Length: 286
Image (cartoon, rainbow, N blue to C red; front, side):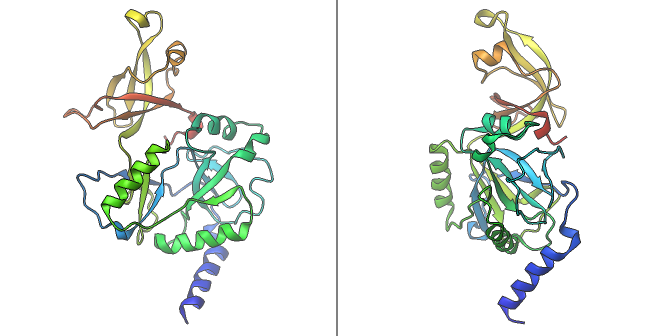
């Protein structure tokens, strides 16, 4: 069988197999933070894409779910003619529009604002092909769907770590969040993968709000800090990064927040932690 015939065979088996008509969100692959100054990689072995700050979502082949498994209510036209295989991706409007994306995507009553949203697909979670082969199949599936609401996250190759740094700087200068690096030969992995890397100028994480700490001085009578706990059980105060409005109406106890930081102390506490945003409950992977 020649290469063209083999590619067609692999594609037909992937689409036809009932194994790939997912009924839930498993498996779910997570990225490992990448420190370009500490870890040397062969960049030619990776596909690089922009890290989109939207709502992570899974198309099961028939339904659209958040990463915690909550059903996303879309207009009927939004998923019309999408492939009947599982797709991993991000519901996204544009850079800097996370809150707007959240208000649209997590509404129980879909409206015309969905015309501004696209599902940016980046992987086939139930395929056993290496990433570069999955990417080819994914591109073909999206082309066949012919629905403007379904797009492929742009993937490109770079030739040096210097070029990678320049690309990161360009994305950040346009209010982007960072880059994703996906090893060409990596299989989809359930959990945090060392072959899927995220490159940012700062680290970020999520924590659960335990309590509110009252402010002092100019913050008297409003929030001074949040006492939060990470998934690893580390408890610390998160006191910077809040707007005046957020201090007056802080994230409630038991909600989850995203914060950025610059490394960790010897005791595992984030250094220079700063509040970024409250995460909607439906977007939290518990």
